[in-house]
Image (cartoon, rainbow over all chains, first blue to last red; front, side, top):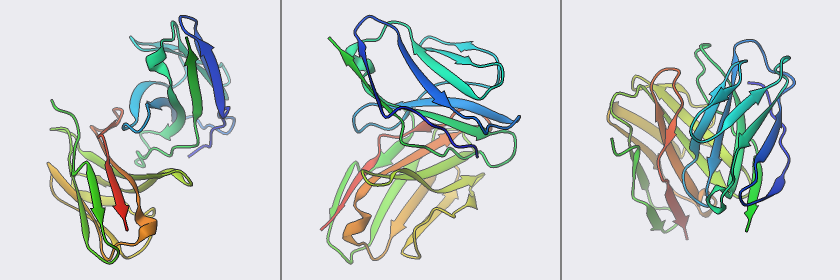
Length: 112
Length: 112
């Protein structure tokens, strides 16, 4: 699986958009980009995933560059409850591996 | 659905004792993953199953660790004998095919 690079930490003001970047320059054609977050000591929570098109759901938007070498997770109106560690993962499907390899993630702190 | 259910939520045991962690995946899911999380090593994939069959156990640290999935609704992770360095939070996750995985709340294991 391709490796990802994320900033160690970021701050964001409450109510503002949080933009979390991820670099996955070695991503291959059958690898999707997934985002999870972990709030305090809870289990990781699925946010969104995509292959090459931009995606949006009730939680966030995912913007993937045309060359697919990087992506950005956007939380449109960050709240204090969005303070968490955010993980960007690339995962090959349907290659049969199906496993998620977590990196160190970005620690996002939303400030009041 | 109640989500992925793990038990116990907390376990304290003495070094040398056998420890069994339990997981009930989401009904209908055919993939099950076991992860371990520590401050030093982050989230590590230990093993995952497909249709109750272990597919990749390359992350299992040593022979003291074993995992089983006797049926589609139950899995166990056993450590025998336990050591202080096994202290960690253990997460179970499940998914259906290529769909995103959902995680349980974890079991915090302390070996004294």
